[in-house]
Length: 79
Image (tube, rainbow, N blue to C red):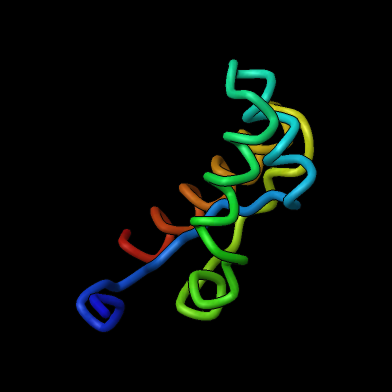
């Protein structure tokens, strides 16, 4: 893969049931959402390749706090 070409790989992850609920809320039928999520795999390879994993099981505010913390961390490293 391309992983070695990057200084930082970040993945944003949510539990399968949360992803399904959100996909249906966006207008997909339950069956179509299940098919799409199944096609994406379980994410284990993606998580293994990532340097940072952001948890997206909570609220948008919780996600934003994690992203803001990551940005601050990157800025500190980069200078």
